[in-house]
Image 1 (spheres, rainbow, N blue to C red):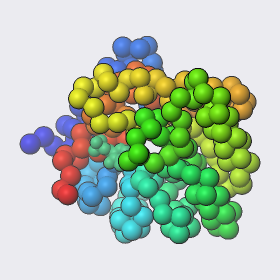
Image 2: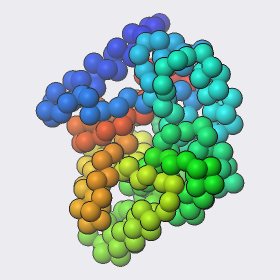
Image 3: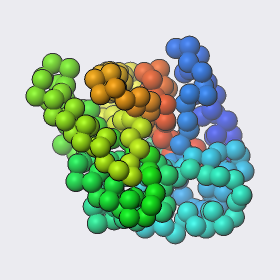
Length: 242
Ligand SMILES: *Cc1c(COP(=O)(O)O)cnc(C)c1O
């Protein structure tokens, strides 16, 4: 078995190689190590190996793990929430996370905004887009946005509203690609999200600089298509125990 440090080196090399293929600066890609189901000790080992960004998908788990990790390192870490959020837990997020990737609905955006304001915080958020239209996936519906005016107008209207909410700093878009046979098959979905980001940015006159896309099975392609945040679990920490 490889060590955590070897896994991290391998992932960083793969990121650099993907960037080189499309003439991107690797500094423009942030590696978010998805530490869900892994222990605080494993996170601290990754911190010792140089990682600073970590992703969690459950509020309870993060609520125990983050304080343990924080108490044992001086390094400034950035915690990313990447999982589905129950509305009633929205208020628990701003104290734990600096970035929330999984803003999947208007109702949730409003709840997060209220919680952030009440706690006198501002949180960076990513709007999660259901780019494949699969029923199993959460997020704002976007299938057909390039051709279908109604879909595009709805997205623009929702984004305009979210951009007015206090306490939220909208950084960009996030998606999860469908599970496919080969990495190449996810390319159109990532390209579609990148195009949507550009259209929203231009139409709304907002920078929206971030694209959170790419996981263990598909991050090289995501980077080739413009990902600025890749969320990688298994390639770093190994297979998860169910
Ligand atoms: C678990 C998870 C990841 C990481 O998945 P790996 O396949 O382990 O890299 C990324 N994003 C989200 C939203 C996840 O839930």
